[in-house]
Image (cartoon, rainbow, N blue to C red; front, side, top):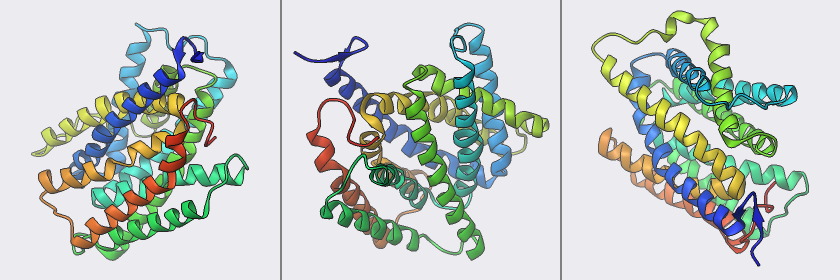
Length: 314
């Protein structure tokens, strides 16, 4: 007899969570391409205020029609505020800063290290141990990412700017990993919709008072491009994708969700070549293949064996 949770079987939750992760591969992978040109037209800080000032306003409007703000305890409001500080104010600022300097493929590959950090956290806490093969795969991942980042085209930005971009990407990785662990903990206390929308609302409330004029619509010859990217970034990459991400975390856990979403570099690479006309070098292609193979080798064998639940990485 199949065990159920909340009226949904384990196999049903696994299928739903995996489908959510697959959709994320396409939507989040292409988001890196969508951000490339706009973040070289306006400051990433201005883009941050526009994105969350507008998104927070939409969430506030939705609250008048849907009671998703009800039933949250004071303690959980505090946890959601902390998640907003880490996952919205912190992560999004350094992520947009990194995206304004680096090409999409190196950035998405660096952020793909998130599941490995989750695994290392689990190992340090004693929840999971890894084989020598998996430790070898971790080294393979690092080698592949090194090849991709090293092969990034030079000349578009100064060396110190590139170093700043890599530093911001590193901080993005830390913030995203921490916010993923926090979101997973919160999903056992409040609903998926609340974990998705409330931090966006709180992030907007925290940011907008700092520079209210920055939420005014952009003007100039490239205003349409910026507005279209904001539409994708808010509706698709923020509302839809973060809901799907939280759903995947709740259904299959952060490690398995991270395994599937590590297909994002492929989408980013194809989108970069097609829409930005920036083909990858042979070294970058080789590094990307090595890194993705390392991710699959690290997580795939153990995760694919375990059907019910997601207790392998906690």
